[in-house]
Image 1 (cartoon, rainbow, N blue to C red):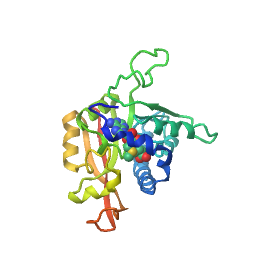
Image 2 (cartoon, rainbow, N blue to C red):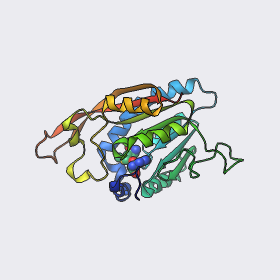
Image 3 (cartoon, rainbow, N blue to C red):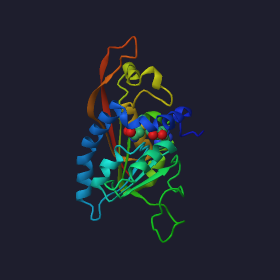
Image 4 (tube, rainbow, N blue to C red):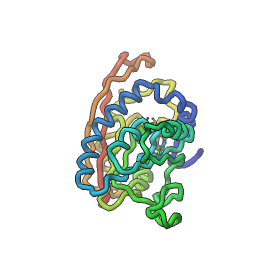
Amino acid sequence: MSSAQVSEGNERFNSEAANWDTNPVVLEATRHAFQTLKPIIQTMSSSSSHGLDVLEVGCGTGLLTTQVAGLVNTIVAIDPAAEMIKMLQTKLTSNSAPKNILPIAQLLEDPEDPALPPADPASPFGQRRKYDLITSHLVLHHVPDLEPFLKVLLGCLKPRGRVALTDFEDFGPQAKYFHPPSKLDGVERHGIPREGFADLMRKVGFIDVNVWVGWTMDVSTEEWSDAPSKMPFPFLVCEGARP
Ligand SMILES: C[S@@+](CC[C@H](N)C(=O)[O-])C[C@H]1O[C@@H](n2cnc3c(N)ncnc32)[C@H](O)[C@@H]1O
């Protein structure tokens, strides 16, 4: 797939999909992301009469999606890697799986993409659904150009809808050790710069922007010869709202 919004190295996610859920770093980061997002979702839910409609962008195999699903009305889970989405679809065939998840294999480049569900099921070709909350986890560092990406997210929100995007922080030169040298395909940047990303969110049109450290976790850096064997990596929660 080639596009301004998807890295040429993204093919890696199709080949890694089958074993994605066995990666301990991914599992630990997802556990932290869910614990960090849960109070945000619960606070938003408490002022919503019908529960939240959520969009998760870059959902992968749905590790976070399936947990968030238990807290919300609906969740649309979209990812450009078709093999990742197949893994999620397989999970959803289990009797105990949540029934409110809609997986979509697509690179999201347009809030009115016909691949997204319609706002009104009676008008299948009408305006696309808008969301109370958009999440993404470990995705921002893979997106080649973050400005159009954020514009698409803004266009997918209801008025006063919110984003809560989680990814590791670019805290300086050592942030490059987050990925082992063998996993640099598709990495567009070594984490997210806290101030710079907040400024970009405001530039795109988000209000109530707050980019903060949600958690810090130790990650093995032993594949790098010039790094310590393990290092702490801060993760950001990037919040903002549509006016
Ligand atoms: C590191 S994985 C994280 C997957 C999942 N969020 C998780 O934490 O397990 C990054 C995911 O982002 C997806 N991705 C890459 N570029 C993207 C883009 N421009 N828009 C949406 N998703 C993208 C990849 O296909 C991949 O599934």
